[in-house]
Amino acid sequence: MTDTPTPTDAPEAEPEHGWWPHRCAYCPGRIARTRPEGAGRPPTYCSGRCQNDAKAARSRDRNSPGLLGTVARAEELVERLDQVGEGIRTELAELSSPAGVEAAIAAARAEAQGEVARAAQATEAARSDAAQATARAESAEAARVAAEEDTRAAEDTAERALADRDTARTDAERAAAQAAADAERRQATEQDAAAARQETEEQRHAAQTATRQAQEEAERRRQAEEAASRAHAAEATAREDAATARAQAVAEAQRREQAEHDRDAALDRTRQAEDDLRAAESQCAQAQRDYRTAREEATTTRAQADQAKAGATAATERAEAAESEVERLRRALTDIEENAAVATVRAETAESERDREAARATRAEHRTERLEERLQRAEERTDRLQDRLDTITTNTSEDQQ
Image 1 (cartoon, rainbow, N blue to C red):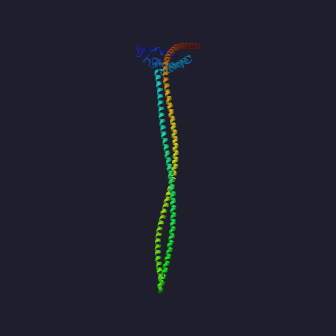
Image 2 (cartoon, one colour):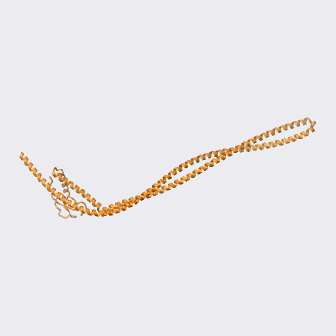
Image 3 (cartoon, helix red, strand yellow):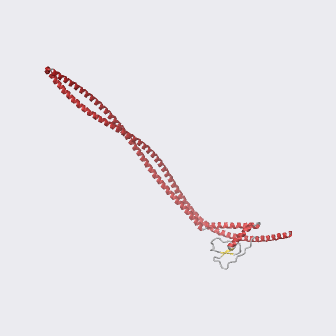
């Protein structure tokens, strides 16, 4: 059974901020203001004691069976709905107030400006990427041209090396043929010198035989003087021929030495030509490798240039998209400003609606007070019925006894 609250004694002195217009929900006492008017939600109870007592009473009523528990639970549900409605009205008032509308407009404007700034940064980054991609493409194209020039230079070097190899081979063959001809001439000269020496020996042997015949045949000296003179002449001629043959042999030896020197020089030139040929072949192989490397680098550079061009195209597209996004955000900002103007008008309308809601809330509070009074009377009737029931139960028990 609900306890009947005892009204609290009203304070003798007037509170600093006056009284609330409504009474305590538990006792009929007046509620003192602790804050200026308009600051905070109006209290329901005049003190913490009344609040605790009301809470305990509600707990008892809520757990009571029958009509009293149902009414208590309905009352608690109504209070909760009022609290939720008050919170909703407060939030709507804050959102619909000029300050709330201005805050929403400022937040929307800040967000739009941030989007515009980010879009501008993205545009600038895209332009920078496009410039870098274009620079890389130009560098790749220059590297490709340089690689092609290096390739042509390597091919020219290889062709010159091949020509030098052919020239060196021709000189070596010519020197070998000259050395063979000199060897043949030297052999023929040696054969002529041998024949001249044999003839000189024969003539000397004949002269010796004639001398012996002249000595043996002194008597025939006069007859042999002519033969001796001819022999002396022949001997002188033979000596001259021998000297000529010796001179020719010396000259032939010199020519042989010169031919051997020329052969050695030709062999040296041949070896040098072979070394040059090997070097030229090595250079040709290196040039071919450089050519293949340059071709691969040119292919890679061309692929990089294509990628750079694709990146530049994509960066340009991103820049255009960013510019489109900036334009869209500008239009959105314009729409937001227009919506802000509309929201301001709506805020004013909402302010009027809030006033009407406040009036309706006041009327609802009055209706709630009337319901509470009716509930109180119902509780009093319930208490009286409970007393009667207890009396009837007591009388029935006594009669049965």
